[in-house]
Length: 387
Image (tube, rainbow, N blue to C red; front, side, top):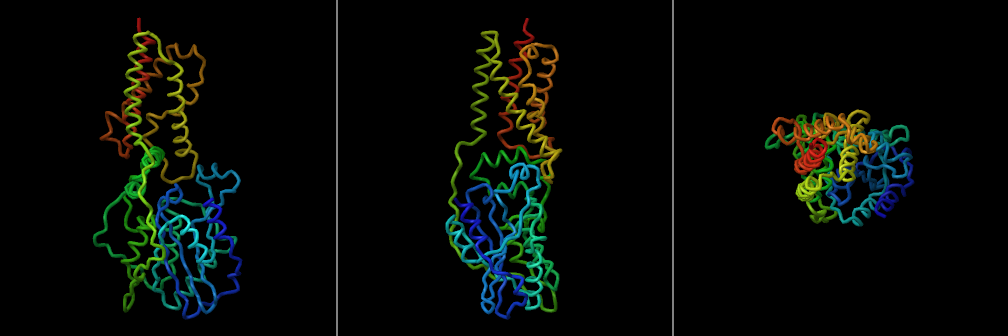
């Protein structure tokens, strides 16, 4: 329902902007920063541009963060990194209505453009909004609703934008997204599994602005150079005062997998006592790790995402397991399979033994998962080789 309301608010404006090419002296261009929501695609907040010209009679929001759920092969394109986002525009009142409905806060700051800069900016965003220009290939860290706004502001100032580098904290990209996922442990750990080593690169001040809150923070302290340097943005004004309530999405995944590991140890004792492995469960472990591994493989080698490669989680989530899970029963008693189990155990032990040497953040749930895998395969191997 929220998606429908949001799209209607964006698409319900039919004013032909190409007919309006000159801004009046009373026109204002402002930066809108929106607080996070509770759904995955709203979890990190949002950035948009408002252009209000009372003389010309329009009050518009330009939004680089829109996409169409009805796009053919939507999920495949999203997974492959080929999903097209677009610049859309609509009435400010309707934009605000969607955020009221979702109970998300909105802050507004005037961009301190000269009249010439306002016109230059307006012309540039109109050019961006043309049908042949409005689509772009979305990249969460490097080309999104916030970075597009940052770039079009910087490109249309007559002076250089100078940032305040004092007290700028050092973060990796992963550090930043973790700040927004604290109450969503399953989302946080799930994303940590599929995001590779590049996510742990340091994000400098400029690149931190892929996140709307950081864009607001760094542009608020920036100045436009010149004979008389001027602040880039005015003071923030609260348009909607909502703040998303902190809610947890349930049980911590680490706890779940520690409990499963404990159950696996009890089951191993039962298997050894009966001298019989629970093959169906072990096949399921192979299938589950194979599915995760297949996703990691796809995102690493076949997709266009920039930060899903070089992923050490492929050690425990081995893609080939997806096929092995369906092999005939005789294969699970063969000598090659015994060597395969040893290989899988060694791979799962690497994150446990050499976590200090792996140059990638591994979520806490990976450690009980690796122990669970080792316990399942070790008991299976023991029963297969037992005299």
